[in-house]
Length: 341
Image 1 (cartoon, rainbow, N blue to C red):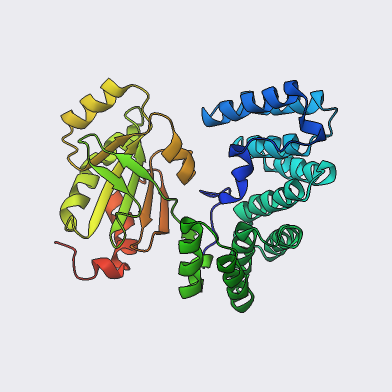
Image 2: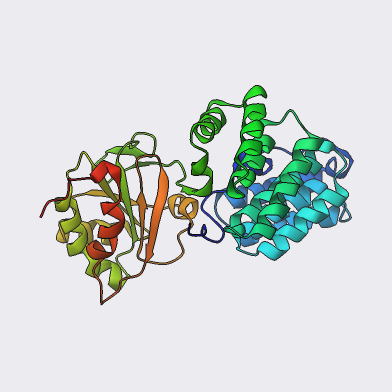
């Protein structure tokens, strides 16, 4: 079993703290502290992570470095800046300064997610992540997300029976529909917990077609992350076109996600090269961020159950894109016997 990628795609509903208003507690009653945190949250939503980090640091300074919520938000910003060391350190400070069980539990949970993000299949890191989720669930046993995340860590450690117990507890805690669905899928197929799941996404293509991971269930999906200013990306276009002809559209869906900022350049290139499959320009970077894309081109193969089966980075002059994808596509049950010669 290959290890999962470092700083993975999505880290759990656990970080909902970011989207919430600060609880009304001593460290956060100062209007200046609240204002700084809200400004940082706005920056986060606009992907201005450095600005958000400074806002959260400023909020904590105004609170005399005793604001657990501020440290929690700071950790979130650090993680987006790919500074896991400071993210973990900020979680520890949040745990130490939190004045409510809610914030302390959230900090343990967030730290567990950060550890799980980089653990791959490293036993020591997974065990530490398990401990953080266990601490969160012990502090707030009625929060379903803590039990779900603890189950995920246990599944990665191949502790399936213990994981199933936590998944049952999660379901007993009345989770929302999305969390309930995830827990039920893991219960039905625990091995999913040892694979990388694709983040749920929704997008509208250049031609107005609405696509989502949920709507594409049962299909094999190839995600092509590219940009017009990327030479290897431009060179791969003919091979990607060939790929759309190799498999029937009802079995395999190719989605090209562009990182272009210049919409006109993107539209002109797509038209000139007759890229007649699903095209989307990720103008706000949300899809790129959700999938953890940091280099171009990057290709992902997602199976019918929404699991990422392969990541391919760059263009190899010794081996074509289609050839590199061929092996993994050939292993997909949904594509068995479907390849056209």
